[in-house]
Length: 419
Ligand code: GLV
Ligand code: MN
Ligand code: MN
Image (cartoon, rainbow, N blue to C red):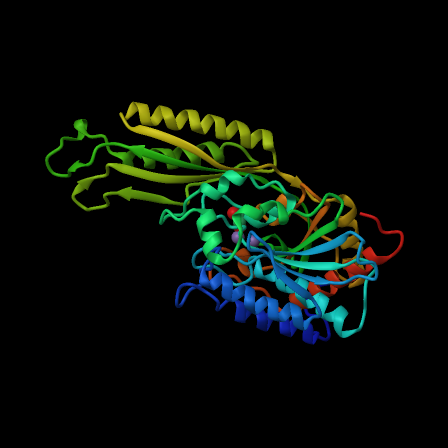
């Protein structure tokens, strides 16, 4: 089925209006920037918690800063079906990445609540505190804490202003000493479902509103620091220079070349800082980040190892000091086949042809796979644009996503469904 469904539910209109409202909760005037443990994060939690409560959920904020709403099941002791995504954003973000998965969860629970309907199991909606990993050199703080896989060492990692995760969390009202209280006990989660905009062009190109994610590619993040010698741009002859930026430029081109050479590999140098950063000074220090991804952990691992070796080689040849820190390694994640089948059944029942596709972007579902079966429903986005204020999705697609998610929940409630 393509084109608009005949009638759009008021739930979908509410969802789109709330995405607009949440998209205005930002640290920066005029652009969306919502980093973990900021006043904007707090404001977003309060806004979403109010919507959760109106949908019949009991809410709490856990010790790492995740907001969780719970809609009780007929059997409160039954394993929970958890729905959600993240509240943090990149800098100058779109309003759908993350927020959609949280508010779609709130909306389907609101539909259950409005109809006086209880499922056999509790449904919880989670708004994770950190998925983008923009503020701190780490990511998945919230989802890893829920899985009990968060290394407490990350609490010592500083942001760009030197504030550590632990200090920021404490100032936010969280409790870095109580991470253990955040973890869900083994067996307490039946499934994790994440609705997310596709962030790529595939669904739009094929004129499909929704897709089921088969697997999420793995990712590594590295931080490289090159130290040369700052000097006078006019007096130091070219052959006498140790220019850190020239080394960084060579590294950026190396990443492009190496990652273009394999079909299943992408690599990005997304951040570059140069010191002292003056027009007439040879750069003395350059700091850059690498983001390397592949659906194959083997391909990614080999590429990262080769790149690290080659980066040291470039630095040595230029007489530059060099450190390479591995900040994040997340293996590729296959979504649970049984949950994929449930989503497929729900799509067919809603008249949406089934489409399967992999995810190039990272998602909280990757971390959640450590503790329970996971599934993701992708929603078509305009032009495949994401991590950009031009991110968009349509009201009819929002409507279909809500219908499919609600139907999937009800399918999970049938006695024979057991993912
Ligand atoms: C998050 O959006 C990521 O894929 O880096
Ligand atoms: Mn996201
Ligand atoms: Mn993102």
